[in-house]
Length: 104
View 1 (cartoon, helix red, strand yellow):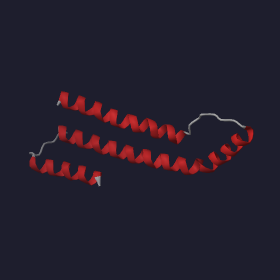
View 2 (view 1 turned 30 degrees about the horizontal axis):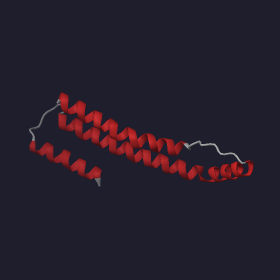
View 3 (view 1 turned 180 degrees about the vertical axis):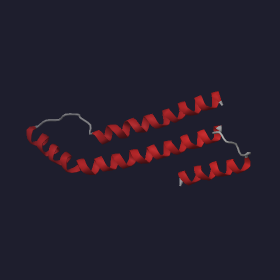
View 4 (view 1 turned 120 degrees about the vertical axis):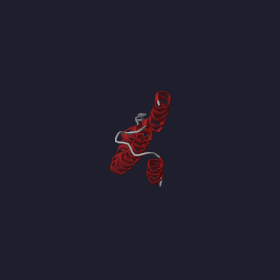
């Protein structure tokens, strides 16, 4: 839904502006927003894939740790990706917007 909204905004803004042969600031902003949405969707797909792939492995490791009495505080890869993405995406989008609107 967000992607459709961004495409609609970009198309409407082009209709209200004169036709030019170069990339405008609104094009740059729209494309970057679409890339952030695509990256977030890709991250969700990767995390979901890794979660499903590692579910049986995690159960086997948990049983082995319980049997041996071990308790390592290790995180799975998909949890690390999710935590990094939760922090990185908003910060990168904030940095992009600050730089974009200062230089625009």
